[in-house]
Image 1: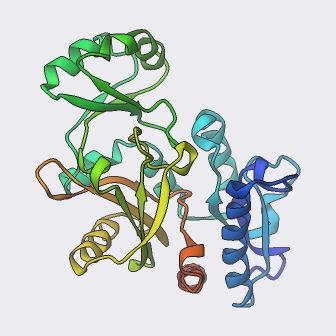
Image 2 (image 1 turned 60 degrees about the vertical axis):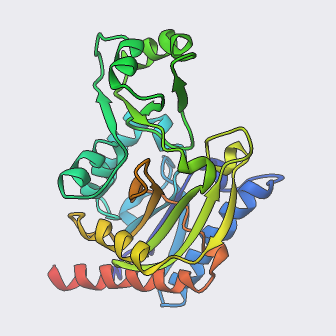
Length: 308
């Protein structure tokens, strides 16, 4: 496997997380998670490196594979990231594959899932340059509360909770955003406040483990960036089947993935996000899951070498 290469696989991260000084708990968790992945891969005899995706000094021809792990700035620099994808894919093999990365980067993928029979929250996609006002779109939806966010986003970027009282306040901000990028409006699912969001980690198409994310009091965002908390969660057989079915519908088939799900306003399980680029995989809640991750990665590498 890549005898002339320096690495068999390089783990991709964000430049902020390469050699951090005075790392806080948030960054320490990132380093811990990446190290779980690195050591599990090394235990399988692989030569593993780690660097930021935008490292201009790194020679990408020196690694057989690259795997996305904590590239948590790509959505803020998507045009640059997209161009980089084109270039790096000519020099090294990507995990997950470039087709998967591109598909999953834009939340229009939710429409593809819906068309395949997967339940998602009620959603209105608003394309870049749409001349309608946010107020008109929201009031015409008939919803009481909704969430507005970009179709390319992460970490709660430009994510706002809209209602019939405050919608006018977001009109100017929305107008500036829609001129530059597509947006989406979703009916707010009230279970998020009561039950939180369940996240199911899947490797090689098989469920590994789950966590429950809860927003802090007075907020709706479950990310720890905004004070959300994470709890171990025992997934039901129904939830495991749901998560595995969602991942099975992806083409190309992803090596790793995370299915974030909530109960919709009708009480049915619905996909809120499908994370196939750089999901947090929560190895620290189940350290042995890193072994399952590494096995799925190795299986992909072996499969590719046989097809060459």
